[in-house]
Image (cartoon, rainbow, N blue to C red; front, side, top):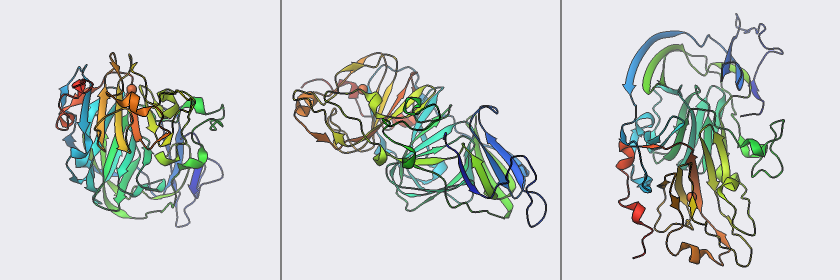
Length: 386
Ligand SMILES: [Fe+2]
C-alpha cells in the first residue's frame, strides 16, 4: 500500500534504542519487499521474532494440473465447491501460471491452533459470502460481503469468521498487488479521475500487544509446501509499527464506476494490477447514454490475455444463464462476446445491477483437477443459436 501508516508506539528515529519499561529493549524488525528496495514497515516486538523451537515439513499442496494447454472457452460453478471445516483445507486452486494462482474457498472456520503465512505470494481475498475480522500483527481489519482484502506476502494472519458460511475468491500473486499507477500522481496520491481514493481504503486498526509465551504454530506456505514452525512467542507481540507494507481492505461497493455516451472498454473497471495480470470490478452503474448506444460489450479478441470473470450478483448483461459464483474462462487468442440475444436485449436499457470481478492473466493459465470438478459441460458451444 503506497501510503504511510503507523499504529502503537514507535521511537522518534528508526534503528535506535527503544526501551521496554519492563526491562530490556523492544525488538525492531524490518518487514520489507524486493530486497531493501520495495515497500517496507518497521515493527517493534516485545520479543525477537526469530525464536523457533521446531520446524517440520508439512503437506505438499502443489495443485494437480488437469489441462496444461487450453484453447476452449470454459465455465465453472464456483458455488458447487463443497464447504470445508478448516480454512487452509478449504483453499482450492483452480487456475495457475507463473504470475498468479486463482482459487476458491468455502471455509466454515479458521482454527485458532495455528497462524497462516503465505511466504510465496501476496494474497487477494474477495469476500463473496461471509464477514469477520482479519487479524495480523499490524492490527485488525473487519470485513464483510464485497470486500477485497490485500495481504502482502509473509504477513502472518488468522481470520475470525462470524458464521460458518463463507465463500471467498482468492488470488495468490507472485508480485505485489497494487492500485493502478495511472490513477496515481508522482506522489502516490490518487488522481481526481480515479474511481476510488484514499478514503475508500480500510487500514489495520486496534493494535493489541499479545505478551504470551508458549508454543505458537505458524504454517508457512513456501514452494507449495506447508512448513510448520513452532515459535516461543505470540506472533502478534507488537507494540507499534510504521511504514508502507501492511494489509488493507477495499469494498467493491466503494468503486465509483466510470461511464460514457458509448461503450467504454474494460480498463475503466480496473481495480488492481500486478506483474502479469489485472483485476477489474464490474459494479452497478448507468449504461451508455448515446441515443443509439449498445450497452452490451462488442465481440472482442483478447489476443494476448486470458479473461476470467467471476460473477458475484445481479444480472450479467452479456451472458445467459449465469449463476452466482460462476466463473467463465475465455482464453487469449480467440474472439468471445455476448451470448445470443444479449446485444439486442441491452439496447435502450438505462442501468445494470451486475456485480463481478474480472481477472485478466496476461499469460495462459493451466486448469487444475479441482476446477474440472466444477466444470460446466460444453460452455464453448453456448454461443450456438438453437
Ligand atoms: Fe471479454
